[in-house]
Length: 104
Image (cartoon, rainbow, N blue to C red; front, side, top):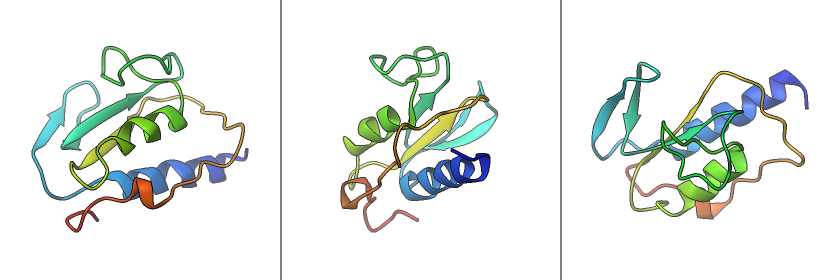
């Protein structure tokens, strides 16, 4: 996948899954603002992990699947560590990934 397409997926994921309602907190590991639930992704992660900063998932698909557990209820921020993320297929976002009325 080309870098521009991958960046588009990352931006689309962030825009789709970030909500404006909920508790905001700084993510000290990345110096970023996390809205509600934070799911961490790293090329060194494992998809069997819970997606915390100490135990990140490896793929955008795993992060999406974790985020779906909160869709429509809790705002979710997916934080990608620096690195390259290869996709075997197009990452499809559906209504199951949509936030509630308070989402961006």
